[in-house]
Image (cartoon, rainbow, N blue to C red; front, side, top):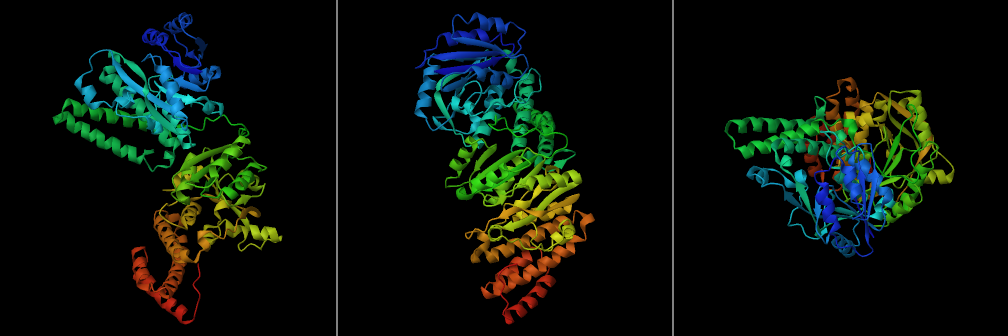
Length: 629
């Protein structure tokens, strides 16, 4: 059986033709039913629906609270069968529409989300400027006739003609009720697109089939420039909300707005002024479209980013008062044998995490199966996949997707002891100015042996940026950072560094933090993985280079933070020592000239390099072993 689902709000002008087309449908194998949700109509749409009940297998529901997505979520309560076909109240369906959908779903068993063909049904002859300058996809949801059957981007599956396997909804996924038509003029477009993009990020696959066809009714009122420019504004709002959901809240800002959007808006405004003097009507309209779209993007507040709309099997506990909400970000690559233990260590916290965000960085092992099994067991995991880009890119993806007011980091081969987050929450409760927290760690082999080494630094030193910059005193899996502190940094983890990318960000973070918190009881277990890159001899020299580059970047960053000027000599001294070790190692590998040139290009003065060369020469003569930093 197939269920066709749509909602309507004051659709009396288009509903008669739409419902008539449905009466002429060839029934698919197993039959079909129609679920229509009246979203508070005041123009007689409800009466039209009820009058059609004798001609169609129709169930009419009502959802008085405005919002198309809210109405669709209400309608999902009544669906039956394995395939849910979603549409709008202004389509005209081809006679074989549902049989074509049934056949397409059978032909494409590896896909869960489908888009069909959408053809404009013009109420009048469209003007030339409309066909030449208006993007028919965003404005009228018209699909490209050149699209063939097969995989397609989630953003190309559109509301008038799409289908979703029911198992997706049975897994708890729903439409975001803050996006889409809601009875106002300035709503954000992209309700179905937000849904499909979110599902795609979770691993669901999308396909297009040109066989199921609908026509989209387009009246004369929808072909005016004023209507189309309002559409551009809504499109810009929806587009920006999707960017925020993907991490755009970290964008650099100008006058409180995303800098890159302000720049584009200014460029288009200047172009529009020039076109007003000597451009054609088509050029002017295209620029007006761009300006309206960017105005819509600028109108979006930073805190409007959509959050997850998955109905969790075990939802996070309610947050009361000022209790911190920790989003735990776990990047992973081919660590299926360790990942489950890491996730369970978060799940078993005495202070529950707000969410667990696992970012799969192109794993080729059983990582997906491990995560899916944990989700079935009721763990509130958000699973994001991406092509292999490295640990920094995976962490950044997780941070951008995080919904909590704190981001806690955990590598997939490390684990937490049960009181980790409770200790962090206690530090925050004791001092509301704490922005950066790290904790004492223990290696797995030390824990197994029953002994924990004495700490190198005191608690006071662990909360002092100057002491932290003097060595490798922060372990990634022990760190929690307030989201607002991440917003104040210019960027997240640098993706071009092979190693030391964590320290580049941590050094900037402790510099910018109002206060640093440290948990003195060991609560993070660091795994000793023999295959780790940092333990391979071949990576020693590249790691030294990354370390020096990371320090050079932070030194440049400190130039813009005069309050922390005292930290610059500390990092410069550490960088000099690192350069000395680098040159000693390079001399042994016969790469001395290469490394001298590299140091000149990466921020060291000739004087610093000269000192390092002399010191390194002494080290070589004395037989020092430059095995690391």
